[in-house]
Length: 166
Image (tube, rainbow, N blue to C red; front, side, top):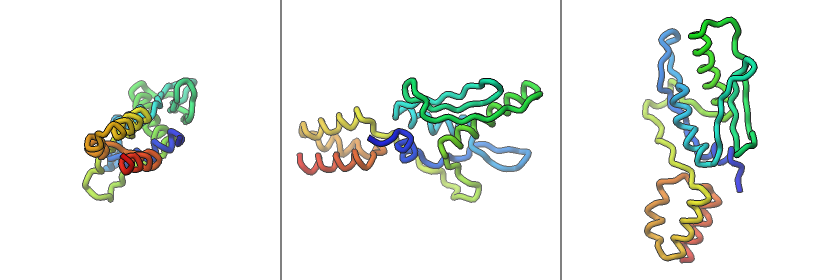
């Protein structure tokens, strides 16, 4: 079985920028945008993302059950007013998450078309259900459902073989 972070990297697409910074006249991907893209893929893989603030640092932690599999932290600046501190926390959450997961954020010069939304990753349970459906003679149902998912090469090979042999 592949490492879950490798499965994540195979499934996640380029994150579209959705916000504008009027001071620097540039665009960026907001924390809401980034979390909206990565959380469904992480959840499908059974991973949880946490972003606690502890000892003057903003952390991003990826958990698999009760085991930490990846983490990143950055020190918060000191002596900030509450509103500026809140902005710094959001900024650091965005950047620790993007860095930890090696996310690609689209650039300003890229095509104006938005990337296609990512499809959910086929889980082990769904894979087993597909194989059982094929062996019970319902190939058409499976063939109709497959385009809705991102499928690992390992699963795709097994599905193709089952379709061929049944």
